[in-house]
Length: 199
Image 1 (cartoon, one colour):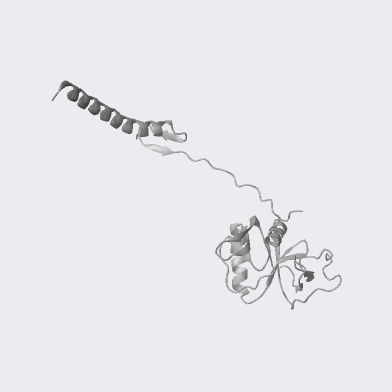
Image 2: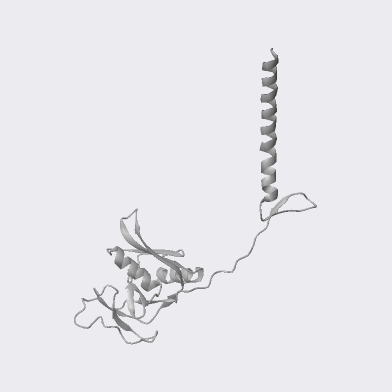
């Protein structure tokens, strides 16, 4: 072997050794320098520190649910004029948000607390969808209500207007509820706005 080839070989071995050292040292330094990682002096093991955060305050007013107790009919004249304030324990006759039908509703059956509302085009169904997220407590109450009222219609009411009036076909579990139907993107956005109780 010539001196040049031996020197080249030694340089290659040195480079490989340096790279191997770096491969060992860098992850160790990464753990040492990562914020939130502490070392227990007695056991020499890494422990992740956790911080507790308070849940953000609820900004959406509770949403009233009323049973639909009569057949809907097509509005005429001033049928869709805003109704006077109606106590929760009294029946209500009012229009839906699209002003396409007038409903007779029973007294409030339930109030649910929403934490988030969004509208979007569902790529799987190609329909406009309004997605509603409820608190865990509201989701349980809604599941119990839907289980007891299968094949009945319920109205989500905000400010005396029916925002959505679906027929219950089965018990609905979970904190996230998706409402979809034959509505435009603008109408879905308006439904979401009303559910959020935005002026």
